[in-house]
Image (cartoon, rainbow, N blue to C red):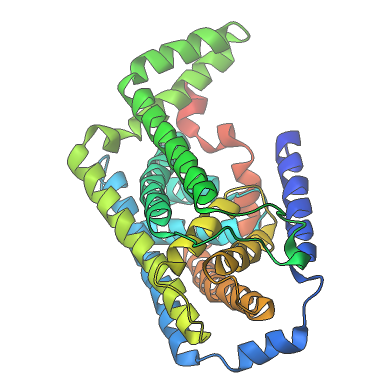
Length: 365
């Protein structure tokens, strides 16, 4: 069967590749590679192992959080949740246009027989709890990062941003991002508590164009809102949010130990700044592996918290930070794919055709 990629997805892929290539060129065009390799050779690999351990701990913690969301609807074995999560995470790293979230929902749908629209709702609620953790991180960054004077990026990076970076600018950006996340969370709650009305609106609006399509769309929305059951169970949702805070703590500890391994003398709040920038940079369309946005975020964060840092040491740290995350994601994700006897290419193709994934929705037609 021929798989046609929707135009919107093609635009996302092209835009992501352009952004990634541009960031890589700006970030590494004047690099002293001898200094970069020297910094990598002098790294303390004991600290790097600890950093990888925190990355692996984050894998388990992420599934623990999702468990609270999914279990509000039905019990699913931890191994199923782990495999679906890690395959989705692998897809986010190696496929363009952030295909990991629909693929995570698809894997869980396949392994449990649940409708895709419902498992996708589980993923959406998981993203809400993740967003809550990120909002807390951004607020902590705004509260702890107090540069004594405005900062400018080095001359060879001013193509990225040439203005002054002040405490007011950082705080304003963090607060705006946090408010945007609160708006997303509020919108999800509104959809859940008005779910019956949402189904009727969907049926009415889509019905203006096609009655058959309206029935399918209403069925998908119905399954989606059913999968949002955790929104109506404060205890389950609260546990998921608490675990989300624990998850973000593993991210912080992974970065802190990596900085120690690179012998960087940084203020204690450095991981808050670098992780905040990283979360924002990789949220935009990017190339496979987040190549470019990931490195730019780490380098920019290090320059903000330590303006006098050697730029090539910062680049070496960014490269190593990327590998510390990429290698475990790929290794564990490939193992999970083999366990589920699935192909990432096949999952990508199927995730482009949501209506073919949801047998319940098809029956309603």
